[in-house]
Length: 246
Picture (cartoon, helix red, strand yellow):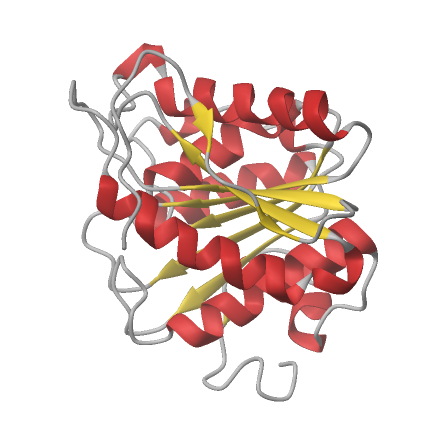
């Protein structure tokens, strides 16, 4: 049965998934809307729970625990940047609960933008943004908070809601500030990344475990991080990635 997300005035962490001994935490940031006064999306939260379970399972040997962030509402809402504020609160809450453990942020759509924005806390070691929605004024999006983090952006080339061109522009700026930035393109896929969902999830697990716990990356990830722009920012995600670790 799908757990309901009740609207409320405060952000919350969803139910924890993972081992009892915590060696690290990943926060899943669901998608949202550009502007909305509505409460958080039950469907987006449910989708995030599936991803959280998969990430926690992949990192069980390292003690990885996962939470889905329950936003106060579903809208970014301009200068309020509510989803980013909720994500930043969630990182602080993880540190309060679990102490000095590495934290990863995995955001989807508007949650991808929130993950990139909320990366400034010292506990954050990995940032993953799936098809991040970014405004036309992307040149004004901050990137200095990404310095010292491992950053992965994944975007479908046929995305009609969140521009892959804008995420490339942000990645180019981020790479100048932080060499540990890479971006993968999922050719022929749209915003939801449904056609290559297994590969995107495998890539995300590889990146999070490598960035938080020092596990060896798949060769494609190592190459993407090492390659100069634009190669490492337009890395094609190979069909079947993960079946043989890319």
